[in-house]
Length: 506
Image (cartoon, rainbow, N blue to C red; front, side, top):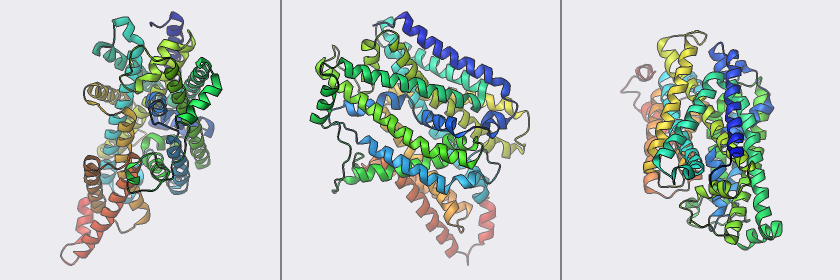
């Protein structure tokens, strides 16, 4: 089914409005402080919406419903969301004060204050690699959704349609972010939140209405198939391999959220743009509750999809669960509403990608360029460079999306969350070393990152550890190895000069 002109008009109006917003806000960009931190003027309501929209990509919009659509799926993913709420409270208690105690542009400046520039630069590079890989995969899934819409125009899916989809979403996101900076990102996030949540609620309402028994059939189907089950408190020998177990999901989700929202520049940049620590703390805590409710809606959509396609089986079997919701939107949504929901799909993608591009440019300028070139952040020549780097990281993520179409075999959300837990856990271990162990020296911190990376690579390759525990495992390996290495160095103080080691590592 080809999209109706009214649907295309709705999508076109939305995309045009986003570009216009970026264009209008570009006049407020006069320095790096304005471009990256909105001159520290943002209030908690819009920060809350920005945090939620930033961590809600097309992966969330399409893949979360796929969890409850699949045979054996249930509401167990909400157990992780409960951990996300707990993790945000930990961030408020552990990290926020440090970020607001100095004129900080990135989270990794804390590592510089404690360990020197080499550790800061290494952590920054790790962040840039992570963002490029995970958000490139998010762009990949967005392009698959757009491909579903456009394929009828080209006699079915093809690489050409996929390439057009990547270029369209990628270039539009670069354009919006490039012109308006972080202030445009905030306002785009807020508007995009309302667009994609409106689309999701409309889709859920229609799914229930399409069922012959309406809400009663929806609830009965969910109960009979076990899809409305929420908690799994079972304890057995394979608990560590089960991401749906409450203890694994809650603890893993809490540590993952502590890592992503406490140390990852993608999120920290939102707090640093706040008027005060109080505004940042309110926004961070409230965002966890909003994310929980949002996941609940997406999971209910998956149950509705399963009930609907049991009642009316699709003419062509689905190749992957990620495409179920997208095909429903194309084939079953009424004219006009279909365009609104697909605008929601694109808005979910653009909100995450725009935040990613801005934070990547911030890290590149502040942590890798300014210190090496011995420039000040008030140097007017840095603003054009910041915009060039925004374009560069956009192109990198587009390249990752093209590579993903040829090699990705696992479901996208697991791949994205695995990458996130793998790397942010290592950074969390570093921050814990900085905050809790004053004896750790820069060289020990660098070696801790190396052992953290090696350890997590071995776990990823040779174990079946549930992905929610990746961040916990990475932070523990990094923290313990850094502590033991420092003890080893201290034990050799009669043979080596520790002051020389510190000087060399700094």
